[in-house]
Image (cartoon, rainbow, N blue to C red; front, side, top):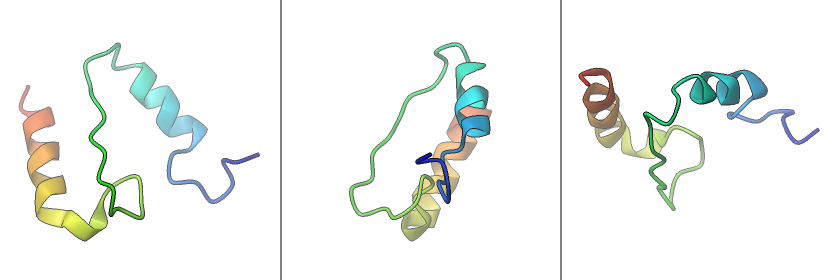
Length: 53
């Protein structure tokens, strides 16, 4: 039931599970969302790093 209004939905969890361990979690303590919109430049850099693997 905690998935209601969550930014980390069951579908998002399924997508991460399909990566088979080829991922890691970065914790941004000041973030208010799954994706740290308060740090957009860092977020963009991390997405580019991941996608260029």
